[in-house]
Length: 230
Image (tube, rainbow, N blue to C red; front, side):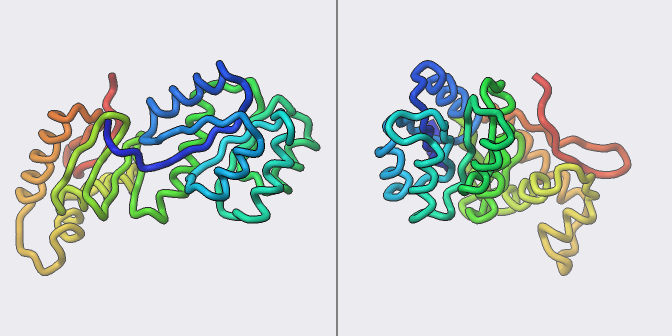
């Protein structure tokens, strides 16, 4: 398995539900999920260990989730926290945000909805880690690595630059001329064929590594990124 980029702390006393969440998130993101059901251990780990995201249930034994969050925020203001709870009243949701929650998800929820909420928080986090995310593939443009679950691909500099542009501007069709200028620089006197060669090589590398991403050719316009239809 490739090295995980993010660490998530899941605080919930529901054993079966927590196992399902842990398995699902680790299958869909490059993450390690630590499950903890003891309130005091949640506080200790949140303060002493480095986590990128906290998933916090309110109905915890000893201290409830809101009390846990109060204690954490006294010493760790920056840990992104998604509150997950059966409590769906307006008062509880507002209170969760007032105490420092970054998001609030009412149980029962679908795992794809959880995936979307977690993905949103990780995308915010990625901006400080020299990374960009597309379709849950994490590109570290400092190290030149692309990863997801058990997939890890090492890229050369220009492949990394190309994917960084495509990932960051996934709704844009990029002309060959624009890519040539942004990747090689305005002083480079190459041709459109230079871009085509780089893309052909990168497509081959991604396909051999089972990366489900398409670099699409848009006839007469250029290239754009999309998810491969399975």
